[in-house]
Amino acid sequence: MSDKTKLAVLGSGKGSNFVSLAKACADGSLPAEIVLVASDIEGAGILEHATEFNRPARFIEPGPFRTKLDRNAEAAYVAALRESGAEWVALAGFMRILKGDFLRAFEKKVVNIHPSLLPAFPGLEAWKQAHDYGVKVTGCTVHMVDHGIDTGSILAQGVVPVIEDDTAATLHQRIQQEEHKLYPRTLARLFNGEIRI
Image 1 (cartoon, rainbow, N blue to C red):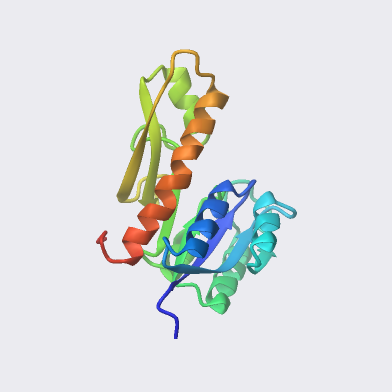
Image 2: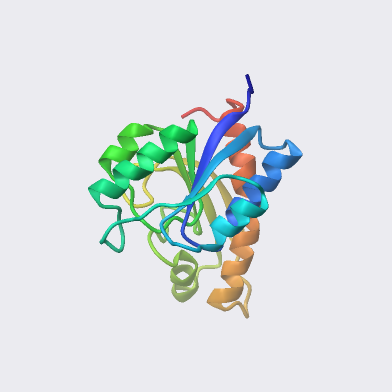
């Protein structure tokens, strides 16, 4: 019996945070096994990366809504996660809001990384919000997922200074570099029991 935490990763995009988690699992710094990578976007980069890392990858139909899963889709995600044996769910750029049934199925077991220092700049394109607002520092936050948007308990934060000639794109790039260090490190502390919820 493996003492590694069974982790599923959900994402909608290129999957760079998945890659950082998969590398940390491979080198032993994250005591987890990725048992499923699922996406709401067919052909998403994250699914290609999952295949490269030899992890089970699945596109799961999200239903008709743009920002959330419909009831059937939610049930399909929960079924796939349960089937994989996942104990925890890490969101890595998953662009849909998860609702009641999903969060009840994995109560206090869903974690997200958000590209700002929450509670500042929740929601979409947080790096652009921060850049437009003119803040001097921003960063990223690993937090528990609850029924609000980016409102769950904060587990860890990484600070990224805003440089004079930053564009929204260069700032986003540097925030992502910080995410790639913070996310695996925080999940490792969570799974080791160093962080208590």
